Image (tube, rainbow, N blue to C red):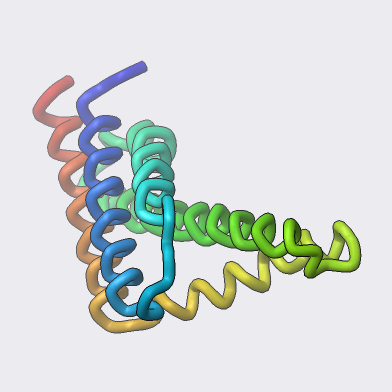
Length: 146
């Protein structure tokens, strides 16, 4: 069911996903083609905001902060998983794996490698502040537009 808190939380996570994706691209390798990286992360941010954060609104301000942190953690997890799957498929098409289980395990190995790109102060601050703003904005939208 569409509602204002779902839309607000989805848009907040979409914006944070865009900002963090842009920071990763700026901090990344020169000349690397990131393709649909930013768009995929923005879509995941929107969906997590809509499905995870949007339905947990209306439980108070403390829960709103926790909701924002949970939504941000879920967004980071699913973005890392999606990018790990994408890279695994790219490598699998070049016959880099001996079997399917090696390819499945490499998804998580690649995701852990990509998570190291998030360990810069500006990205961590963006994620933390974005989570707080998203949670509080969704709670305010829930109180204002019932």
